Image (cartoon, rainbow, N blue to C red; front, side, top):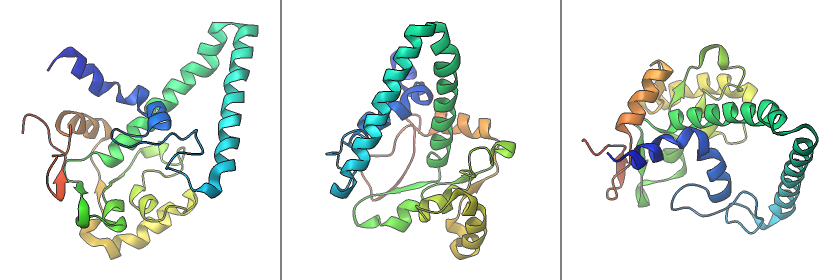
Length: 201
């Protein structure tokens, strides 16, 4: 595999989230910063304008503070923590949605519940509570507006109902990451129920 392709695959944990905010994912349009984006309802116009305005003001504030205190201040107190946050957020998102046995649906084979169940719960140990129980991801997908403090209780309630449709991985995080990075490169272009694969398969 050419070096550029390798770099392109593993840039994910540093750039995926910022790119997603501006462009969404490949083959999908919609910026999180434009009220005209297909992501938003017309009634959400002023919410988006408010968010984008505050985001812009934050950038201006960082620019001013950098001018006052220098680039090392920016790197130490903003860029460094931001990079750690982005890498962790992208890692968690990747691991919840990228598994060899998670199906992806197309056409009439897709409906909301099937799509919502195309994820996996994971245990992040002592970090679970720090990031608001997002390891309980199946419940998060089904109940979009559920508060994070109810996710564990909801998870226990849906397990017996979902049966085999409920997925939880007990595999260590680094092992799962390695397996998904090496075997989950794309889903086939054809088929109504498809799974991740890699060029070697």
